[in-house]
Amino acid sequence: MSDSVADLIDTLRSLGGEYFHPSYQPLSWVLSEEQAPVFHRIDAMGDAAIAPLVQCIGDTAKTLTRIQQRTVSLGVLCFEALNRLIYHEEPSVNGDIDLDWPGYVTPEDTGVDLRRARKAWQKVVHDGTFQRNLKSSHK
Image (cartoon, rainbow, N blue to C red; front, side, top):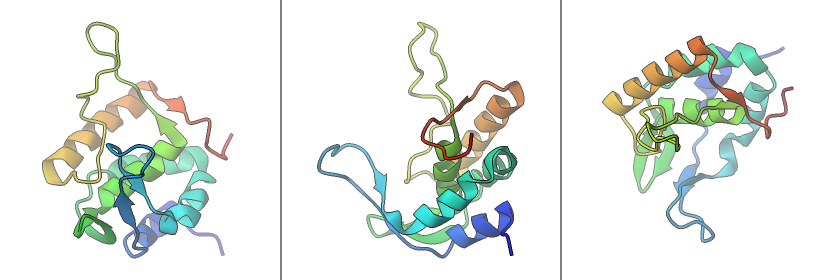
């Protein structure tokens, strides 16, 4: 039996795992590997997974995944899954990448941040201004 995207998103709630600072990049957050098999299954769904993942980015439901002893919202994990399929680099007014674009999600984001991110990603998908992630197994 094959899982739907919704089933796999629901599975992300209970997998656990933890965000940590790797020694090679101490200012960045990296997610432990508990979710990797589910991310690979979502990735294999390709374009069919994009809209449900974008919608899920705004989901503030708590998961078993943690960051510094706090729970992570489901929307954060949906962003992780989406970012394995596609990415977007919003240009700033001077042509650089706009690092303040609301579509960037961090593991600490909750509520308003996640809803802003969902709205930003809805526009990106609607406008088709995303790029396919070369790491994606789906071609």
